[in-house]
Length: 395
Image: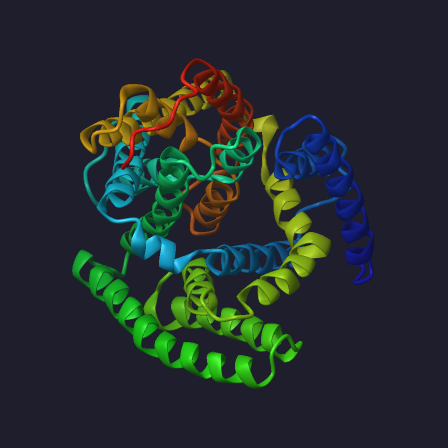
């Protein structure tokens, strides 16, 4: 392939991704859905305009690292620490129930495998994909109804943040256990050491950034150094601790989320993501999706995957909310509000593909879950709030 062909590929990806992203937004769906559809359309499965190359894979990897860095930057650490045990318990149940249900679903289709077999880790990884929550659709819906700052809205928002942190930790363990050279003790030790490193070094970096930010506020050197920190942590996590690079990027974002210019850094990162790396990453999901390999069994699995993904979140988060003494209809609101999937589910799936825990035909199931959950969640929340518009139970 000629070196300059990459420019043609990028031009096609950006144009198609943005067009279908805007079309998705017009249809009240997340833009990422449109960008994935664009990748599917221009990829080998349909039009064949763009082929998956090493260059696009590497661009997509940068895109996913930047997305996780932005997610970390957008975390309200004070709110996260302030929410107390209820949001944590709801988030934990919202991870555990889908994880177990997803693994059992895979084993139900392809047979039960003992601990240590590759099939066992594949099953657990399918469950790991279901742990992620994308709360952006829910937030927008609650904001439109004026319910975002209510007890239920605050609980959903806080639990979703904690949910993603737990999900990333679970992903780290699953990938670590899959490595044939690893053992449970080594994986646990590596994970603990990484987070100890992140806390100690992160605190020092945070203090340095605060000083630099105070001396040179709102200058471009701040996001540039922030980007360097993101890439460095992604490298250190993979190279020295065997932790997923996206975990390192997310932690880098957490380190900087409380400095004065965290919003300014996020704004500059968003330009990179919006213009180039984001469209390439989401379109690459479509490029990887092999619909020619979708059999009747895979299609049935995908439908069951969607049903289990939606119901497991409602059961896990809803039942835990009930134990936390929310009213029945508020428990249902919390469960439904937590069932949307988006970028993080795609990021987890992408990581599974790169380490051999997932094959490309299963991207169909993940994309279907994102589309169905993104459309159904706002509708169900509006119906619930129209029937139960009163003040929520105070947590």
